[in-house]
Image (cartoon, rainbow, N blue to C red; front, side, top):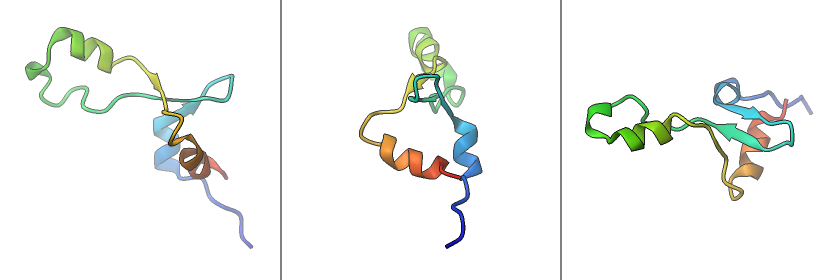
Length: 64
């Protein structure tokens, strides 16, 4: 069986932390930014961890 390739587009959007968790940046950060409050924009620009219910699926995309 051939090796699985890493999904490069996904790998550019997600980074693995030192403890093995997945870190991602939020969507919708600049589109219609004037309609969002300053607090919303501030929180959207912070990285967050991938939710535990989708970590298994996301790790399969990074296998390579």
